[in-house]
Amino acid sequence: MDERENLIPRIRIRKRSVSIQDVADRAAVSIATVSRAVNKPHLVAAETATRVQHAIEELGYRPNRFAQGLMTQRSGLLGMALPDLRGEFDFEILRSADAEARRLGYQILVSALPPHGSPSSASALAGAFGLVEGVALMALESDNRVPPQLSDLRLPIVGVGVSFDGATDVLLVNHASGARAATIHLLSTTMPENCFYLGGPPHLVDSRERADAFSACLSAAGSPPRPDQVICNECSMAWGEHWANEVLPSRRDRTTAVLAATDQIAYGVVRTAQGLGMSIPEQVRIVGCDGSSLASIIRPTLSTVRVPRDELGRLAIRTLVARIEEPETPPLRVVLDTDLTVRESSALIA
Image 1: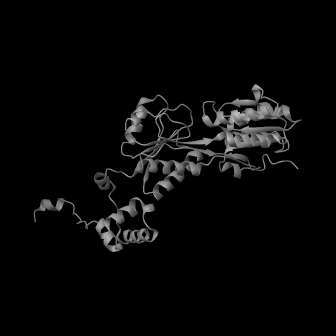
Image 2 (image 1 turned 30 degrees about the horizontal axis):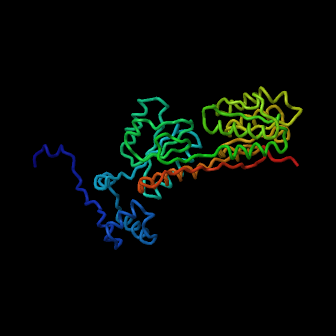
Image 3 (image 1 turned 45 degrees about the vertical axis):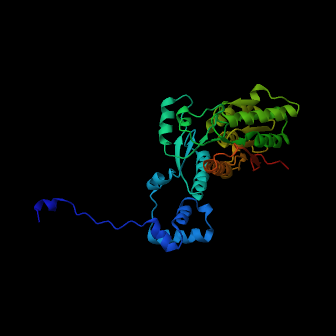
């Protein structure tokens, strides 16, 4: 043997890859049935899908997505773009979206939505989504337009949260319904002039809709809100703490009710009120928004307006897949309501 051959690493002879035909033979079904069971399990009878899955596990079959895409011109990938990728709100939406995508035989590619008017970021977004079959775009600001680099891909697009100009289907959240219920709840034991709304940035759809609902309820009660009763700033605990430190010390002699645009803002008010020695809900009644896990963890537990995040993520994927598979169906517009969960922070005083 040539000594130079000793310098070459030993090459392990690879076993023949398990093919889709092997799976079909083991499960006693056709190749087409295996393909449907792998890619669109909801189209296959439960017993057949189970038999195929057992064959796949026994044989160690791994579908070659790239090869499948070349043959079918389908990647099995869906894009999701969110305004940011932090916090419980985004995580819950992504978790339910991912579960629904896998149930329907798809995978999700996630990216951050570029800031409005950011061409370089929009180009990167379009590049990232070059392989997907459709995109769910979620936003918090109104008057959003689909980035031109993305619309040029001519993909099915579902707008989530706002009515995107360029999206075929739209899923919206009725933030006003929950805010209205929360305001009426607070007014049941608190005079309108002692109720306050602490919002996030005014350009955010949810914060603005909640502010409008709050103001309308006070006006209907015969007391249009003063400028100091509706204040928008930022979605943070620090903002709630700052407002409470500025306002609550002078209001110890009367009950104060607060509707906060997020649970984080509400928690800032709770912490500060407790630090000032004010009782909740006797002196300060507080309701947050979003329905985060924080609301049930803190003490006293926090009343909150629940946003249906699980349903939003699930419907976004289901709507997008329906548009991909039935492109000629009429455009869809769905509005999901928000609802109030009453807990200790605003419970009616006996």
